Length: 317
Image (tube, rainbow, N blue to C red; front, side, top):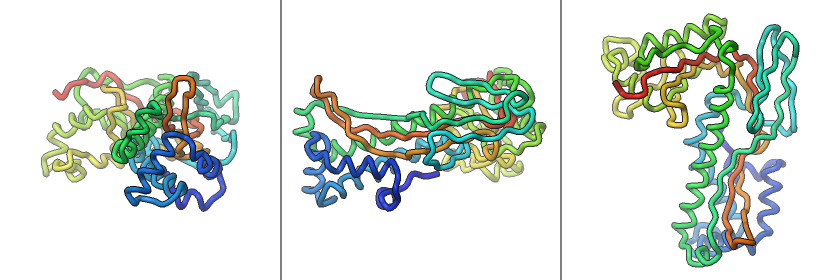
């Protein structure tokens, strides 16, 4: 679920629109004032609304490549502070919150409550004196960096949700052993079978970039006589899919760990407020800048739709 651009966002009522309407009035904020002044001189916009639009769209542009966590989980928009999801008999779920994970047994609980109280955020701040001399390229680069950092922060929280699932609740009833071997076709079959054995169908394979390159070093992914090679793009250094699973590589994934996930049923992300820019200031220390945030809730609904393998070799060969 890609964040909306500014024009689309402002066409609908919601928390983000309310924050931006309030932010338009803060013309004295040193960062916003400098961003507006330099942007007008460069001809990018003519007023504060245009400035916020440019800032928001830049945040989205740079956050989106880092928001791969949203491809690892079902994402639903919401305006509620909490939503209650029913569980199948025998299912095990997890409610995720900052710094804590609560395990819920389906045999005792028929529902899991997912609260939208998690905040992903990134910020950058500067002294008033620095901002007074900052050029447009510097200011625009600050917004780009904040967008990228926000995407990474959100993705880390989604990966943490899956990492918190107890071994006995995973597909196959245990963490699969990588045996200190490189990720290979045979290892992928183990992950795939673990989820299929629970009568789910894995849609995503999440791995560290090192494990992706191990696959790119596997004959079955680079030699044309093997079927998996058809989903390999050597020029781009990518494996797009395997066994019906979209391959999602990221350096944010722990090196030596791989997940096969049925994202249709495994977990839910309730997105209450998507990428939004906010002003930031520390008047006491004379520092000012911007902060970008997303607000959401996370919960695992069917832990056995997730297979996990650890102990995979952490070097290329």
